[in-house]
Image 1: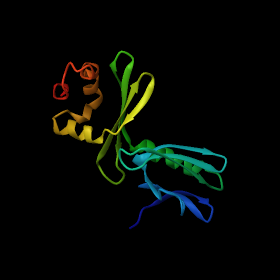
Image 2: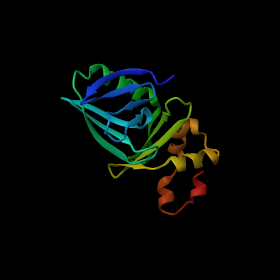
Image 3: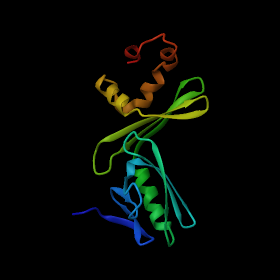
Length: 171
């Protein structure tokens, strides 16, 4: 058994296809497949899908424009549903004053594994950090990963940045 096709649209001599595992892009477009947990944004305009996805877990955002023909309504709905279904935890925690972090856990398609990411607010700017190794370290250090937002709310990152407490003391 291959993957089940949920929706598709023509794109040149190929197609844009949504399966239960990934968004499959037309021949000649890189990346060829984008698992649902890596899709950051999909915007549909007249004949063009503007897709932003991570270039692998913890990777940099990558933008690609995919032309299509036909009405995108069904495919756009499936993409929205699959992306939203991959999000298990999405929370914002205040860390210090007005600064905080957005914590997101997404389910890896076809698995029970979760992929965590943190996006910090720094001076009104969102800073996406490649935090998968840090998240794994926290899990090994005994932090209850089922409630990462609550743990982050208790952490004094500002004191750590001032050098008043060490990384081990954060835990």
